Length: 237
Image (tube, rainbow, N blue to C red):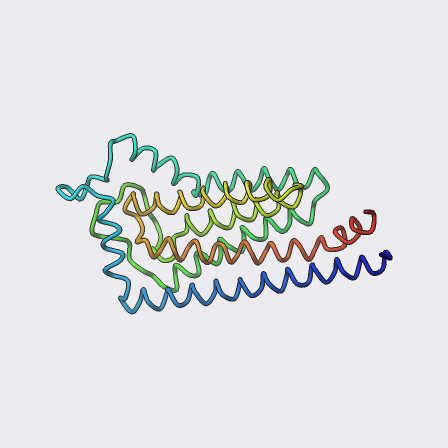
């Protein structure tokens, strides 16, 4: 196989992957707005109520289900999606990428988080959904409920970092492991928000969906920005 033909095949594979990613992105976007429409048509009220109450002691709705250490663990986990932890993680990761001469990827990471934060606030302001009032809230809240900011930003940060890290790894198992760990952290953060009574489950679902879509979008950007490096590697091989 000639080098020119190999490069053309690599470019075609890359283009097909980017096209598939855009199709998934479109599907996630459609799902988010479909969910938002259902929420504000009150079609999810029964589901939201059942899930929130499932995390509470039926005899005392101010008491989250389980022993006190479970409640403390939930607060620890929810902190993984908080502003301080995510900001520190992004700064450290971007600095590492910059020192490794991966400056484009550092910019991609910072851009994903900065624009994601702005989008989260814009959506909260636009939808302006009230927080759950069925149970006591076990964590401080300052903004509207839909979508969940912790869930959305956790998805953006952890999934974007997982995608960027996976690009440096060899072997499908290692890549799948990194992405699976990031996904589990995102899921845990979202569940902790419902457990603590500060979000409806549909808030969390919406946060996961739009956060994953945003991470995917910037994953596409990262792949496009580093396409020349990929082609150069294929030529060297």
